[in-house]
Image 1 (cartoon, rainbow, N blue to C red):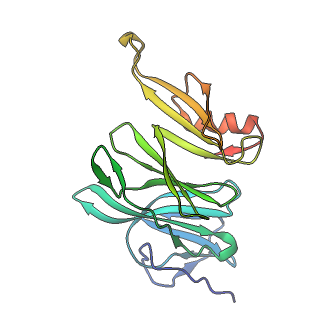
Image 2: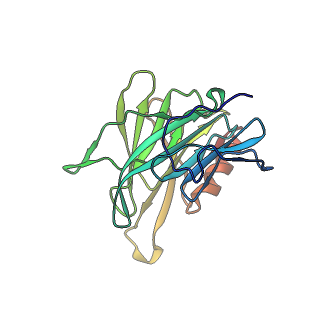
Length: 219
């Protein structure tokens, strides 16, 4: 029987325990990530509590964060991991460097995404209650760059906009009677941004439908 070999990342209730479950997708339950190998669900072994599990549309890859440091109920520091199905979901830590925003160094990386060519990892840094910095890390060169602000984002897999990033922006217009407005854009590989939605408050639904219309998926 093929054995699953993993790095020590997220907590395990009972080391090495497996159970047969009908659902084959990777899962995150109570800070524990599990995957299916040879028809059995296997929890990734010990470490810190995990969150922000992202699953590729074709389930060939996952990404998640390991909460390495907390102050009371706030997460202060995280590590980002990716894992490929072709490598039995063996987690690999991403060597992200602290990001300076308004004079403060941030080590809180959330909501990782992977490009479909497996060359880039994207994360956000929630530096205010409503806005995050989006950061891209190249898995081929190690280059790390800030792409800008967004309220939410996803990366397109497949279709005409493959590997492009869809972002949501939240702002208050000059007329306060209009309330909060949400606008969505798509960013291509050159950094060019194009507005694709003027009323996209439900970002997950909007992004999935927009990507589907061009033959892809964005989650």
